[in-house]
Length: 245
Image 1 (tube, rainbow, N blue to C red):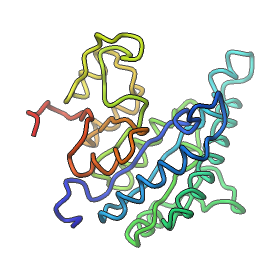
Image 2: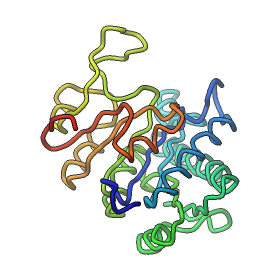
Image 3: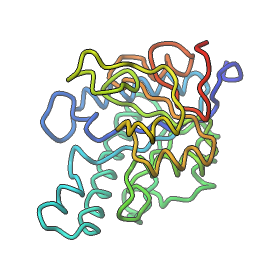
């Protein structure tokens, strides 16, 4: 039962790159379907779930800026890419039988609801998954920061970051097999060691709101559900490190 779970309401952050699967860009439908099935498992536990999805698989604002494009304009294009990913994930979730709503920080009434905090909370209370698109609606803020912001606004018990590896490492384990994997870290550890999992603004926002960050491998089948049960491999970021349970 949900009452026995540590977290009753969570936000899952998924990077746009995670949706590519084995492709070089764009969306991989099998990957979207696998993530949707995992989210369905968590919803089935009675956990209230919301999502933020990045747009890096379609467009990266910083790359546009590097090519000479105005940074703010490029970031707005990136926000539109996140809405495209949100709609794709909504389709995958609803095909998996999970009622879903997309709320966008940039008004586009034909395809999504506007972001309204109380409405989003009510959707989750009714068992619907809410996907937040268009980041914060402002340039110069990453989708990681948007995830921390929405998690705080929704009163989430934890912010989960689905990545390509099963936790936080001292270096990229795909490039350095000797990299150390951490079970728990503090927010200050993340900032002082410059561990490139989330940007500093997102970590600081989570710290200010006492919001645990849990990092796990989104591509491991059932990993999201396992984390909700306290199982599997993941890294927890807290105010103070705790002993493994």
